[in-house]
Image (tube, rainbow, N blue to C red; front, side):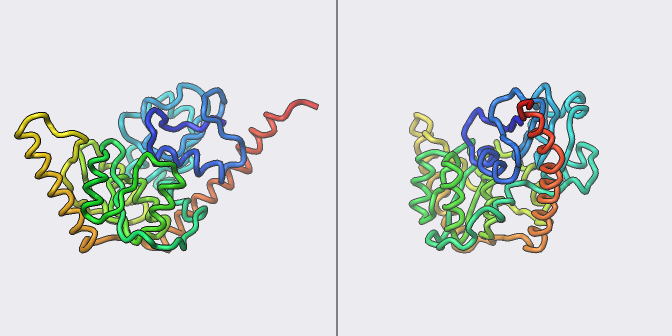
Length: 286
């Protein structure tokens, strides 16, 4: 079975597909196309870039960055989607709006790690740099690289007492590991609709704080240098203030458990029906 995900650029949220699904799906998952069965999981993947052939099995994906072609809809089975905004936009049964599968980390990870990081910051993958890491250090906040290996990111979040993030799957991981989190906007490239889609799935309101956009290099002019210096100072100061006095949040535990259980029911049904048939078909004849 082909495990479809965004692979053009390393990013924690997309990499969770390779990390999580082999722990739950009872058939080999391939990273290259070629199978008649296509597993579409974590990410904003429901758009015109979906694979052009094969039966599409939708497991917690979200709508965004385009529209879904009618021919793809004709080939898919929607087991569940990321949230109610995705379900409504695609005219799906509201009961299929369970949540982002990243919350399954609640089942696979150690929830009792030693808390040796007071506050961490994880930026959106589209805009991070060594300069941003240095500004975090100045603010006394631990920096989590959004392109680090999954196990490293998960471990750092799990060891944190609280997390500030513009990376949505940083927040989802924090929610799964029961680490209080606070969402921030760090650049205009962030697709806020996916945050609202996911947060609605766990009945949690989101209120973003804004941090200055930090580019890897300042504009090569005296004005650009001064502006970058001021923005960097403001970034560190605001980040430090949020780490100390920010309104960190954590969703209702009973709701989290309900969403996880509903996902597990979908996974069990998929394993007993689709995966068992796929495995039989892959067996060599006697």
